[in-house]
Image (cartoon, rainbow, N blue to C red; front, side, top):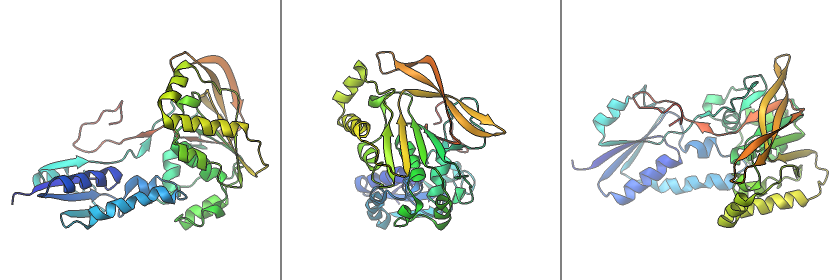
Length: 333
């Protein structure tokens, strides 16, 4: 048998793209894919918000790969416990690890561990029906919530908190998640970004969709709307950045229409402490930032306390170590 045998650990998008590349480039390759979950597609299934059905359609691209007679999948198999790294190498010429980053990065500020301070990673997994988080409970009986972060995950969390649950009924939202969101009482959702308009990591389409619900007003707070020379250069160099800033300007100019839910976007505000009282979150303290001229910022010493009852941390994913593989604790790789 002269076939090249390759194992791929992880049935998410990167795993399927790797399999597709192998199957189209190497005629004699046989690919075996392993995943610890009972279902494929990783973060497309468990990371993309339920109402982003168009984004989830990327899985259609993977069906050709899955139909190949040179491709096999093994679900409910955890590499590192059910199958060891050595086992994989004994039966394959190469092993590709395409596992996700399943935990979150930390803010590293006081109060982060208070009840009411949540990982956006866990919240996203819960509302997508990830089996690891099916029984995770979130107290959604709070009127004012904060999301810290300036990427698409922050937008997803803000949208899921602000949109009425009934608007999710056309999606594949699990019943227990619908029941939880139905009890949601958030009327104000605040999103905080450390830097300015040119440094936002939103993708243009995701950012525009933030206002598609008739039940939600998107309000950009003018304080912190600052574009320095480096920021202008970034806008000029990137069509995506320009589109995000143009959308931001439209939100800034729009008058609120009196919708029952509001999403407020705050720029150049860095969280320095999650405030607690009686063992629960009662606020967030931020420090206003100013640009240094090179797209970096520094604190001004001007602090503000925000009256909120829940904080969602959306500042990046972090990988977990895998048995028998080297791991960089600092980089999370």
